[in-house]
Length: 219
Image (cartoon, rainbow, N blue to C red):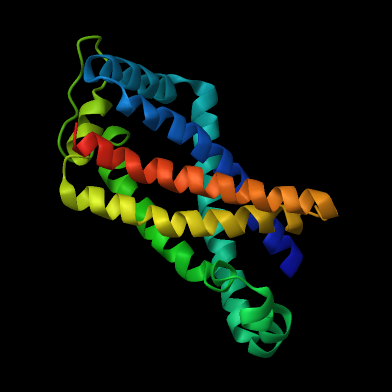
């Protein structure tokens, strides 16, 4: 299996995950509404996600994308570290490569740790029924809002969550640009626009996800 194929898998799955993050952040923004409004909307949204067949299919594609992204990124990072001479020639450290590009493996590990902790606290409890039973709201929907609200009032979880949005931002900034290049996008003017778009996207995602728990904590 060629290096190009592995990088293409990383790029394609990464772009899919970038789209997911936009949807996820949009849903999280419901938490910023007044509680009497936010609870109903957030729980209704969560119920729709769990009961929709189409969303279920997309969810499985998401799980597969995460797994493939992590596995192939790990393989490519390992191969690059084995080829030190080639890596140094290609990267020209401190000249052509950004700090993020040189540390995508480390950033990826930090994000993976966040994903695991996040899944244990949300997905495993809501989807698999592991841990404390999730109650229902007045509309009969599973009260996912209460689960989220409670976690976002745990100062240690809020700090953990918000701080790890920093490596996410760096990862997204470099990853989004690299994904398009890997898939063959090399238009000169387009690359300049892509660089700015990637920066804006990374800032919005990292700041957006990072600040919501803080705001909810002080609500």
